[in-house]
View 1: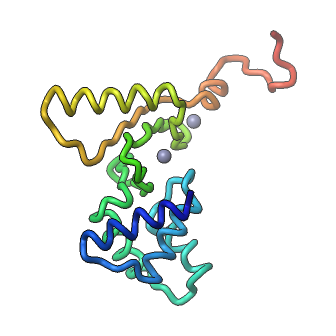
View 2: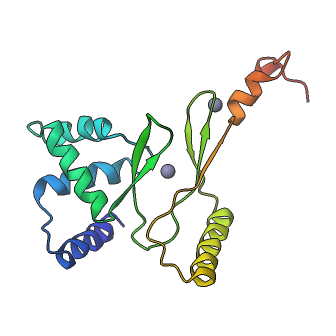
Length: 164
Ligand SMILES: [Zn+2]
Ligand SMILES: [Zn+2]
């Protein structure tokens, strides 16, 4: 699976006249290994350093920017001050939606297959209805997560005492 992703990425690079250098490879590896996390450039830098201790933050910034420009990763702007990066699905399907909790700030991936199918169908529909070519998309839902909702309930009892 990871091997396939690398293959796809290096093909994209060749097509665009770039090379998969060692440093670029390591950064992609880090992003792949944290596929379920939502990483900032600093996060990516911290993890990259454990593999390649001599790499500098500015190099990581440059590589992340390069990967973004080549549609390998996608920048998700959560609000004015917060954003993170995620790998773009190389199969070209719709990027998964996210739910962001306004209370605890947690970012949750929406990966339910049914919902993803609907999102993909919606994207297809937009493409054909408007004659657009969609290159990336961001679906963000803001609200209060189930954990925080639970805490907001009046008289919330510890879980073990909860009456059915
Ligand atoms: Zn929350
Ligand atoms: Zn995500």
